[in-house]
Image 1 (cartoon, helix red, strand yellow):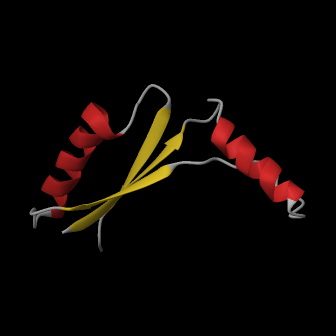
Image 2 (cartoon, rainbow, N blue to C red):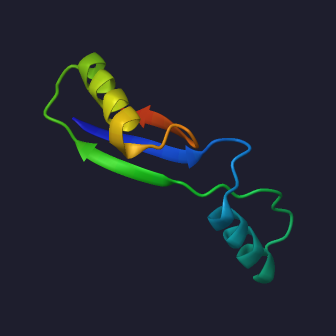
Length: 80
């Protein structure tokens, strides 16, 4: 089962990479962009066939390694 984990800075946490992207877009002439938040996507190919079990395992992976839950939010995406 393929899964994706989307990790982004929590609201209120400074995002210097997002700010740099915002400034670069403005310099390229892309106006009207109020905020840019930069994150990461991690793709995993799991042996699990049960979506509930996969979600539970992914949640534990995020809490223990993939995301810094103090400053980052994460969202797990599994196939429908």
